[in-house]
Length: 94
Image (cartoon, rainbow, N blue to C red):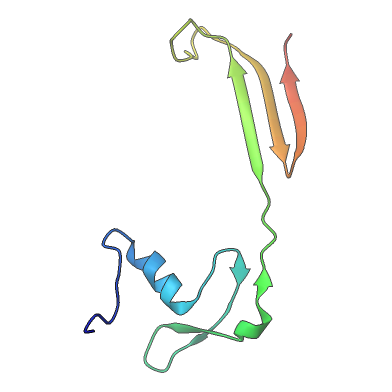
């Protein structure tokens, strides 16, 4: 009867504030300065979704078993990267 709101104790403040304000990741918002300070999101009806790009890279090198590579002794034998699902091989020494 007297419980007004329930919150998780381990939710970071910025995450909780974003949830409370209805702000979602991956959207572009128009922000307007508030008269009392800070900013407020405006024009929520025209939210534009962000167009994320994904970049991943991989560098393979020789090394002793169960050891980290050592720049003094080990050499790079392959460098590759991937952008939005398309893979590219930069270097291959096989």
